[in-house]
Image 1 (cartoon, rainbow, N blue to C red):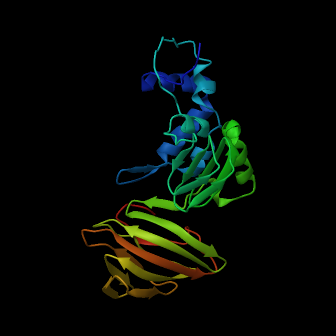
Image 2: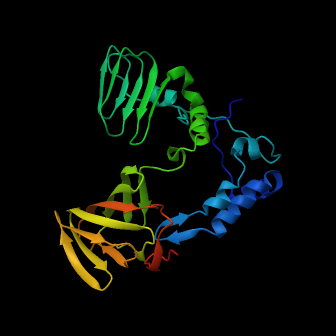
Image 3: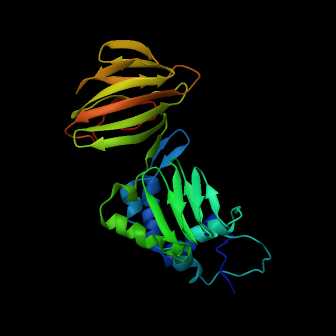
Length: 279
C-alpha cells in the first residue's frame, strides 16, 4: 500500500479529526485566520499565530491516526513532484540527459537539472547534479541528495539569513517591489504599481526616499504638493514627509526607489490613509 498523499474529504470532517488528533495545529490555524488581514483578493494570515503551529504534515498529524479513513485503488501516472529529482525526471531532456530551464549553458554535463530564474548559469563537468539559481541564492547538490534540501533550509534558518523566509519579490495589493541592493544606511528597490492603484498615504520616521521613474506616469504627493512624473524624472521624499505614489494610467508604473537612513525596516511606515485597510 502506497500513500500517494491524495486525500478526499469534506472540510467539516477534516476539521473534526484535526480537533481530535492535532488540536494545536487547528488552534494555530484558526487564530491565524481570525486575525488575518484582508486586502482585495488576498487573505494575509497573521504570521505570529501561523508560526505557532507545530511543523507536521497532514499524513502524520491526521491520516495515519484517523479511524475514519478508507483507501481506494488508483491507476495513474500522477506524481507529487516533491523533489528536484522528480523535477528532473518529469522535464524534457537534451541529448545528454540534462533538463535545462532558463539561461543555461552546459559543457561536459550529463544527467543534471539546471535551472536559472535570471542570471546565466554555466556548468562544466557535472554528472547527475541539481543546480538551481534564483535571484537571491544558488543551490548545488547531487541528484541523489535532492530530498535533503530541508537540511540546507534548516542551516540557512539557523544562520539567521533573510533568504529563509523572505523573497526578493514581495507582492502587495497595489503591485510588488523587488530588492536590488542593500547595505548599512541604504537600500534600493524596484517598484511596480498596477494601473489604477496607489500606495498608502504615509510617512517614515527614520528614512528618506529618492524616486526615479523608469516607465509609465506617476502622480506624487509630498506634503502639500501634488504633481506628476514621467520616465527619466525623479523626486526626493524627506524624512517625516507625508507622501503617496499613485498610478493613474492604464499601463504599469515602474520606478526605482533608493532609501537612505539609520533604520530601513518595513515596519517604519505610519499609514494615514490606505485603500486596502492596512494599519
